[in-house]
Length: 465
Image (cartoon, rainbow, N blue to C red; front, side, top):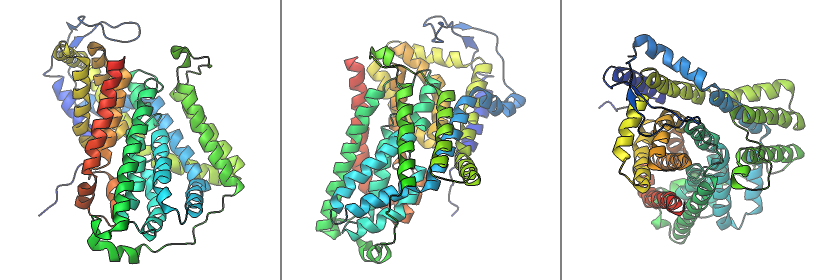
């Protein structure tokens, strides 16, 4: 029997562009009147002349999407280049190895420490695909300490996954979504920090409890029948380089300083009445920050000019697909706007939620993003596609737009932990030799817990404000 293969994000998005173009022939054209800050004025919707989109409009839509989202696409490439240079220095790899060596004999502490480190990566720079390099390093250590492969994979996948779910300044989730929602990435950061802490704590407790149970009785493992084979396969490797040289320390300092400056630069201190200088940086300035930081890292770490450029280009190339997705996704909005149906759909949403409470709106928004995240696996693509439509609906319900961003990234991060369409999930499980159905059996209770935790915090933030 031929297996049904999920089409790529590119195919899905191009298909959506075609469907949206067809809808411009069916959905009535209409417009709102807008405030100076580009927010629609409730009750101002009126019909306008239709501008039906054709095949030519479909073909050019992704290109127009790139023009409209060039600042976001360029930012993604600069982040990729920066991470490429960072990867070349091997600083993160050596740093993790160094921590593991110092804690040998106290492996129980590895679970909360490593999960916290991976979560920090997930919440700041969207560390997800990058985790693939750590499985061969972490698996032998955790298995040799008396735990199973599920514990080892959980440390990485659930650690980074908790960070992505509770993204604070993750440029691929919070950053892009905030940009298309028309708010600063600093808006709502307090709520996102609370979600991050709560979600990470739940993940650490869940994994630690399971790990202790398995260590006391290996038969309690969800891969108990594979125990002997896993012990033989994942032998401890003592050849890992754990010497933290000056170049590694320098790279880690620049890496941390870059993200700290990014966090500071996007927080609207003046809006909070805090006595700190507000930089009000956005994508152009942040792109320059990552570009300059990459060059400084290369210079201080004594990379040759050729190595620095090649590493930067290789890192940018790794995220080129993300930039393509952003352009194509934005093309959907281009077709909707050109066909004058965006405001009509907003009007329908306004009508549907006119008698709905803000709580009901947020619950529906969160729930909608769960199937959306399965259909569009790319967080940046989904943010680009959905935020221009859903964020304005929040205005009609009296909900802050940054909460829509938080609902999006929470639901998307939740799906990331279990979706079989994710190369990271399936790749990590394959390295750990864990069948997908065993992973679901192990993690489904935690997923429900994370769903409840994140949604409750979002709803409480509405109630408290």
